[in-house]
Amino acid sequence: MTDDAAPTNFADVFAEGLTPELRDEFALLGESVGMEQVWEFVLRSHVRILKPTMFVRVADKALISDKAFTSQFAPVVNGIPDIGRSYRDAPVKFALSTTGLMRASTAVYEPGTGDWPTRTTFNMYRSAGYDELAERPELFLRHIRYLIPDQLERDLFLCFLKWAVQNPDKKMTFALLIVGRRGVGKSWLSKFFKALFGAHNVLVIERGANVAAKFNADEQNKQLVFVDELVPDGKTAEVTRAIVPKIVGEDITIEPKGVDKFTTPNRYNIVAVSNYETAIRIEGRKDRKWLIVRATPTVWGADAEGNKTIETDEYYDQLHAWVKVGPNGEVSDEIRRCLWWLRNSPIKTKDFNGQGIAPMTPTKDDVAALTETTVESVLNGAYVDKAGPFRFELFSVEDARLAFVPDIDPAKRAAIDGEVSAVMEDIGCRRVGSKQVYLPSRRHPRRLWCRSERLLPKYLAMSTKELATAYRAEREGKAPDPVAQGVADFEED
Image (tube, rainbow, N blue to C red; front, side, top):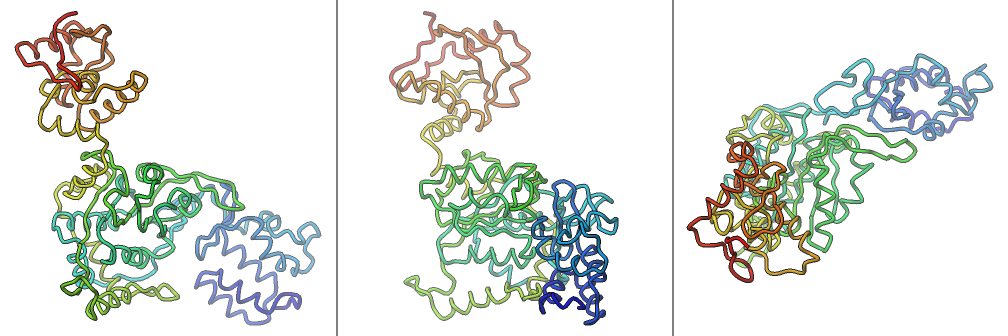
């Protein structure tokens, strides 16, 4: 370059920030390139986003603050002959003064579309950068057959991956959790996902307890978030509260350093692994937000005592070898096969919908049993058995509390009733509108519930008097519900 004051490696650093096409074009200019020509490449390699105010480097979609832009390109504008005095040390001002700088009203992250979804929108998504190979990925499928031995759960795991690959422009409304013993290859999936989707499109959170802190600036421009090792370490509720909004949230707010915070559509899917079934709290057996599968309890190739063998090391060395990514994004043929197979293989499991309710699995049932509260456990069991007030089509929250919750401090009664309401809603019961009904042996009117959504229209059409009559008629001649400290009385006061 003609500016003798510039560092000798300026051209090398500058070229690293160019797209391959611009880099080749820049190299053809040789050593005699002037700063006016360099500046043209600066403009061509950046986009100015109006909201939030920032530069984006086209080559790697990195967010560049005004401060960073000035730091890198002040030598360029200062080396331009006859540049106006007001532009010296002010590359941001100089860039904004010309129409040669590409501009976008807003930035989005839309996998599966090009850099410019519209003439005024710039896409921050970068593809993984490799071609597919139209062959069956036998190594991958062999490992998944070993890793998730239950066929139903394995099929659902593969459906999750296929749906994510086949619908890159859509976000799943539930997350995937894989539970199982240490050392079988669960965490290896983080490397697999980085190779499959591109490392720049995957965020790996090394420890589940860090999830609340990590979910922010690191979330930007991600297709998948992998939470490695959720643990029940006293922060289970906090971690669950941090993850769940990210599963269902339509938008995320990003606060990168040096750039104003901004809101962008949430496009990433979440996969987590854990050695513990109690690592998260799910909302009972009908939880909508988690697909939970179980990993194998057996280490590959282990001897009769469960110790690793030479075969164990060879197996996992092979696994790690074919998920390794080269310095320029090169991947193995097996990863290329995986992408082709996941993109083109049909989703066979009936009614799998990535934007529906998380499918039920045997492991999810186990996790629900372990993590539900006493109230959840009792009410779930009673509902299935049609015990207590669940024998009937109509009942109140108070009926359920009196039948199943031991006598409590009156000061805590409202909180317990709130938990009972939440559980009843989760298991399928529905409030019968907002009508308050006077019930037998109750001094104050109560809101009634019905046992299922199917029954709701019938009871919504009734008056309060008709509801009271229906409630009483169901119980005539029936044994009263047991209560935690006695027997219910359905007679009038």
